[in-house]
Length: 161
Image (tube, rainbow, N blue to C red; front, side, top):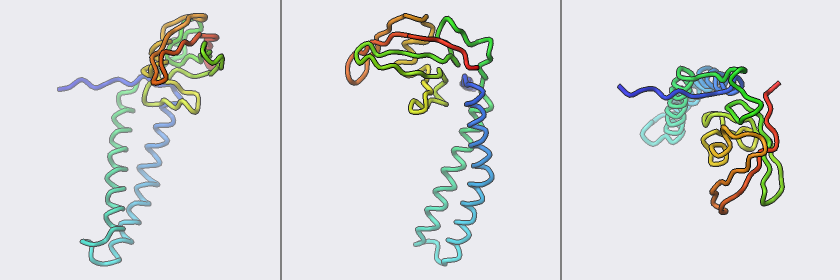
């Protein structure tokens, strides 16, 4: 039997997935069931696009529920004592500066299942994340990107409060 992947996640990431799971199991399932009931009332199901759409939505929702349950069953929560102030670790709040553009960005280092770069959550498996994980403040890393090789300097490392 294949070994289950363990997902490193922050407490906030686990909470968000639990909320999504609850919403999908209860609210979303009920909405889809109602759509299926309504579509059935239109008659012939063989040419009923509303019924087909609702059944597709049901299949997608159930697949996501299964995925969420699998992730949550195999999650390892990043504990506060595992987060370092001197090295970039999972859960660290890290500020990096692009040496090319001189702009600074601050991210929380997270696992790939909770990555959301637009909201300041950088995956440790992304090109930039994997380059800075384990590094100390003032380290400069080079990252290959579609725009070419970029240099980033680690400006600050902190723990969440």
